[in-house]
Length: 291
Ligand code: GRG
Image (cartoon, rainbow, N blue to C red; front, side, top):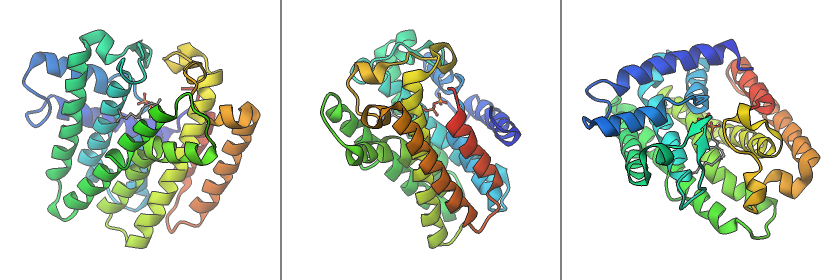
């Protein structure tokens, strides 16, 4: 179960999203585009990345409102990545979050365009923030999501499918494909709070480790979860011959690895210069989540 802090922040995030989505600076004037982006962006996400960013900023003593544009921007990138990942030319999924994927509902061409729109809107949102921080925020998000980050992770993941590989290959894929954006959620909070370069690096490393915890649990869920609860099909990784933590380490080995990673992150959190209790409860949720 998510913590009360998570619920409160995700509710606030939903309000921001709704008011932005239908405002003048929000989405396109074309009705079809609006429907598609609304369908994808407001469809039952856990809002993990925005909540992580909001929690981190408050931990650093700043007002949560200061993350508004950056939190929406990171969710736009995340949503675009899922829309494109679900396409037949990529992972080819019909269901996500318990309902038809965007291309199944609206057609492939519209889904590609919605992804493109979300990707570009993310940077418009950051570009209109305080000029002292908007440049660094753009760079952080572009690096995390671009050709050395999430896009590279997706390329490596597709190349690796059906091939033999080891834990280093898996780490390289996941640090880019999943970890980079989660790491950016923390780093962007650090940029907004204008922390020191050392603390910014600390946040990036912590984010990568939290991303890894998220991913290992994601791989485990793909093997053991109830598809109803998960809102998508299970067993796809194995079916497609994907390199995953359970396929390399076995289910028990993956669970043990998750345990080791969690202890490591808890140690890191206890050495941070902030009160990390809420981040700790996010980590607890990640290892027990069922969707
Ligand atoms: C298309 C460039 C491009 C990249 C796609 C993120 C990604 C790369 C693919 C998604 C495939 C996948 C299932 C990755 C595992 C981790 C992940 C991102 C899971 C989904 O994130 P959640 O659980 O989603 O935060 P919700 O639905 O809660 O928003």
